[in-house]
Image: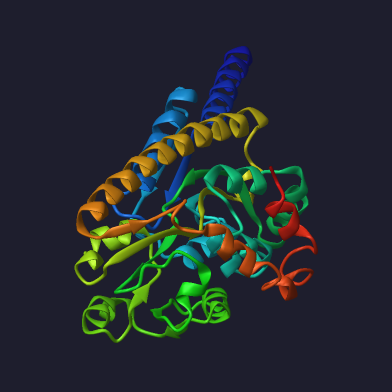
Length: 332
C-alpha cells in the first residue's frame, strides 16, 4: 500500500514539474505604439510578432496594440518602467522626454545626421554605447534595437524658393513648441509663430504664416500643397523607430530568447525601412505634381549644416557627453 502511495506521489510531483516548466516557457508580451493601422510601424510590429512566434515555435506570443491604445510615448514608457507593459516600438527622439533619457536629445539635433544610414550607424556605434548603458540604467528601459526609418522633416513655403540658409531670413514660419526648433529657426533669421496644428492649413491659406516644417508625408496627406508653392527637402530632423523593452521583463529572458527577439527586431526594422522608403517616394511623386520640390544639388544643404555648428554647444556636457556631436558629425 505504501509503495502505491509513494508511486502516486511521485507521478503527481513529476506532473507538477512539467506544468511549471511549461508555464515558464510560455511567454505572452504586449507591444504598444502610436501609429495607425496603415502605417509602416504597424506593419513592422505585426511582422515582428509573426517572426517571434515562428522562431520560438509558438512559445512566445506578441500582442500588438497600435494607435496609442496603451497611451502616448510618456505613458507607455511609464508602463515599461513599472513592468506593466513588456514592449514599445517608437521613435528614439521620444526617450529624451522622460527622466534619465535626456542624452537622447542628441537624436533630434537638426542637420546633424546626413541620412538614415548615418544616423543608425552613429547611434549603434561604440562611442555611444556608454550613453545607452547610462540611459538604460537611469530609466529601467532596455533599448533592444534601433531599427526602422521614419519620414524626416522638411520645409514648405508660399512664394519663396528656399535654396540657401540665408533665404529664410524674415520668413514667418509655424513651428511646434520645441526649444530646439525655436532656437534653430530664430538663429537662421526666421520669424517663428505658434499656431495649433489643427489650424495650420487655414493659417497657410490666409497668409498668417508663409511656411511650416513638417515632412513630405504630412504635406501630402494634409493637402498643404494646396496652399504652398514649394517643398524644400531639407530632411533636417530624423528619427529611428526603436524596439524598447521593460528591463524587468528583459532580465527574465534567457540568453537564447534575447537573441531570438533581437533577430526578429532586426528583420522587422528592415521591413519598416523598406515600407517607409516606398511611402516617402509615393509622397514625393504626388508633391512633384502639385508644387515645386527643391532638393540637392539645387538646395545648398551644406549652408544649413555650417550655420548650425556651435548653436547647441551649451548642451554639450549637460544633456549629453562633451564632444558627442562632433563624433557623430565626423562619422564617415
